[in-house]
Amino acid sequence: MASVGKIIRFDDVRGYGFIAPSGGGEDIFVHANDFGEHRHLVRLGLPVEYEAVEGDRGLKAASVRIIEPIGSSDATTNGIERRPRVRIEGDEEMCDVLAPAEFTSAITEVLLRCSPSLTGAQIIDIRERFVEFSRAHGWVDG
Image 1: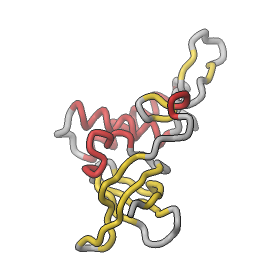
Image 2: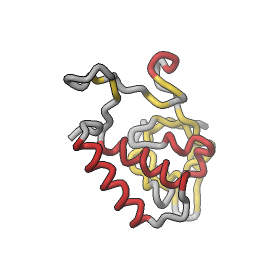
Image 3: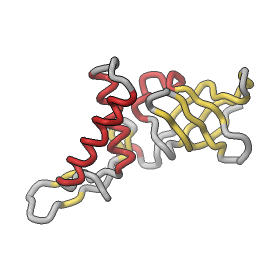
Image 4: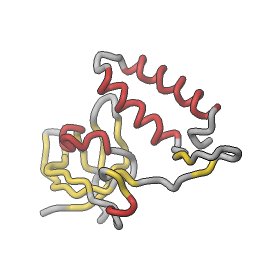
C-alpha cells in the first residue's frame, strides 16, 4: 500500500535521507538510488509517494515516486517548481533568486555530475565560495 510524505532530511554527499509520513509515525529511510534519474530533484519538503518496507535497520522506502506539484504544467519545468521572477532594480533582465539551500543543492548536483571524484570537503569549500559570490551579486537570498 502506497503512503505519502515529504523529504525532511537529505544528505546529498552520502546519498540518503528520511521521509516524514503525512499520517505521522516513524520517519522512513530513503536512498538516493530510489529516485533513479530524478535524484537531482530531491530537496527538503519534496512530496513523495512510497511503500514502506522493513529493512535491516527499520523502515525504508521502496517504489519512491515524486508527486507532481499542483498545476505542474504551469508552475514547473521538468518537475521542478518555478520560482517567481524577481526584477533586480536598475536591470532590464529578470532572474530567479534562490534560497541558499536550493542554491547549494543545485551546486552540489552540478559538481557531482561534472567531477564525481571531488571529496565532500572540496564540494563544501566550492559551494561556500559560490554562495559568497552569488550573495554579492544578489543571486541568492540572505
